[in-house]
Length: 189
Image (cartoon, rainbow, N blue to C red; front, side, top):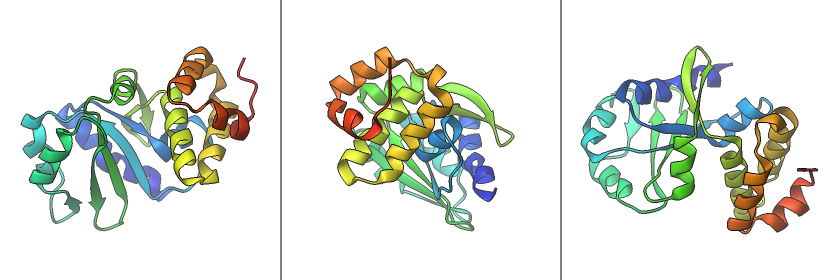
């Protein structure tokens, strides 16, 4: 599967730079749930300003599009929703990079990420509770059924890894209880 090998185009560079990150989104859904096609990888990370130059240089411009230094500096300083893209030019495979900033949930996801071996490479994967919450938020915004399908696959395949007491606290904190009960319909006890 070509996409699987493309994940490490990004994650191996973060590993070499010793940048704290967590893979989330559809790739995390694939790992915790069921295989499906994806055209990108979502990564939440902490990028200290002193590492920006090395970060950019690790993605050569003849092979990747990377947001300019000025944009990255601006985005990492945002308290929430800092974002940039990295695109592998040959394949069009994209990494959506979300800078943790002051976002407690994103920082928690990075802190609690787990190292796994995936496609012959080390990947730091966000906890399933984080992936579920973010999928519910995206569903609430855009009503794409793929997010609900991903959540159900995560629960069906990785239920033993989910702390449902903690997940219920997050559902309440992010006001997602109603969409959880209406759309996911699982016995989470």
